Amino acid sequence: LPKRKLKFLRVLRAPSCGFVGKGSPRRSNERGAQLVELAIVLPIFLLLLAATAEFGNYFYTYVTLTRATRVAARHLSARVYTDTEKTAAKNLAVCGSTASCSSGSEILTGLTTSNVQITNTGNNTLPTTITVQIISYTYTPVFDLSRFTGGTSWSEVAAAPSTTMRYMLWR
Image (cartoon, rainbow, N blue to C red; front, side):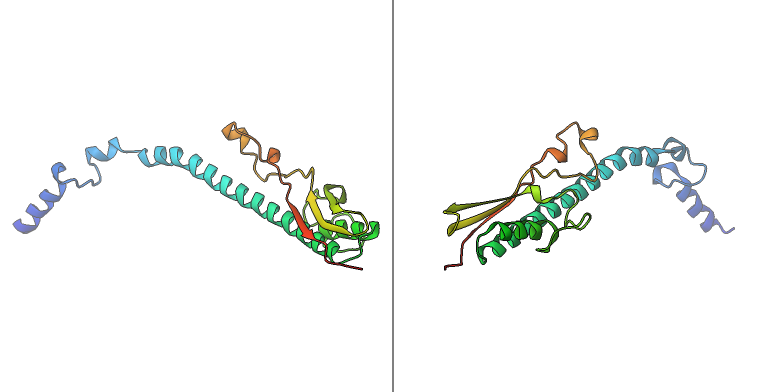
């Protein structure tokens, strides 16, 4: 080899240059460092990912329940306020249809007509406002992060939205 190339190769292999090649003493000191870094960062990353997914699922559930109360309140506010219409509104909130709900047709797992409470202000024949509220609904978490973090379980977080609308039907 020409002298110029040999001099270039010596510079590349010099430890002071920071070149870490095969057989370099610095490389053996760093063996496994990336695995240790991965072992430290991966659980934190997975916990953040699971928490984000859990929050998204809870938010989806809450928004769905809110929409269900809004649809039921809108239905009742434009109909004659009778027990039949109250039952139809409860079915509408639970399964999206005024007809009787069949098993498995709920918009959310675990939601039943007993979770829907309908109240009114004014008298029972001609109410002023109608309130539809979800009560005693138990949220089912995808991941139970409380086992890992020692905090409150997502199933203990209240999911009880309500909607109040003015009664629009006048006789």
